[in-house]
Image 1 (cartoon, rainbow, N blue to C red):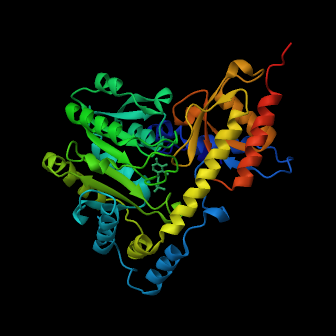
Image 2: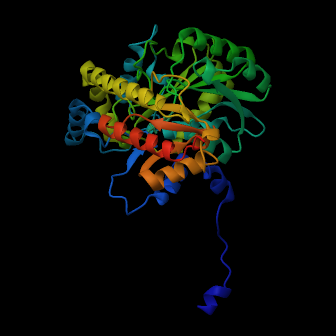
Image 3: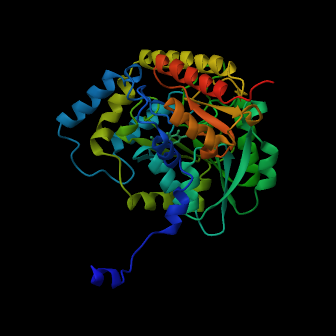
Length: 420
Ligand SMILES: *Cc1c(COP(=O)(O)O)cnc(C)c1O
């Protein structure tokens, strides 16, 4: 023992990693899970993260399950993948995404990844040339921030404006960008804000990005998950104006995040990204990273082709009902306001009025006490870049959501300043 204590070992923590992860959603969720009271008999209500797949209402389509079983049984997909993905899966994704567009995507523009997560990882690493910077939204999906700070890519933040339906602050973008700005990240439909951008607004963003000489990263993992009046329009429609890298996948629309299948598309009709060398670097980085599982790729033509429209419309109906219930119940709670009724994705951002609360000083304390006293998990806004806001997931079983929001209301009442 004494020998061991005296001996010097040459390895240790990697501070860059530890610091990049410190503000991560999972970190906050772990922290809140620690606060739960094990003596509370009630079940925990998880409105903190967006994975409705465990709930029976959000079970994936049987056609998708069949597709995976068939791919496995065929014994045709036990081999290694190619680094950009199997041609039959790339083709299926290109055709599927072209269905809703005014032009046809080429399968050569499609790169298959282990979920969007891996697309984010390789894309941010590729963009992170020393000295450059990237424009990211506030609030945001913080995986981008973690990867950027790990790769020492400077982040410049533009605001999404709640009073304008969470639209991009376009003026800010022009002031933030300089000749070292390489990309602008846009998440549409939006996690965490629950809005979707109009065609006109997307066009303005594309024009601004083009003027500044930056490409647009369009995270469209919630593509078509819209249930308000505004339709979903893909940034792909504006790739004539500005080069677009689109990120998407099946995790959210099919409710199968565990299947780890996503895609990254280079939409570059004028070969701007190609001529710059970026496309070659993306292909190279994919060569040295993991591939999505081959049998999921083998199943993709059937997953995309055989899932009936009924499946999507019934899930959207459920999400609409959940989002409306959420909005209605939040309105009853005095210290919380929702500036914009959710119309897309699985989340809404709501603002805390701390002046109405007696013994709570910020969003983190609010969420910690809420976990402890009500066995209810909600994400503090700071986890997505907005302090003293909350991000609420409404994509859970409706009864559970109603129960959760009533616990939230009780909690808020209990901690409200008493009127004299
Ligand atoms: C969930 C999510 C992802 C990650 O998607 P996976 O395909 O499950 O890796 C990426 N971007 C946003 C905005 C998300 O909400």
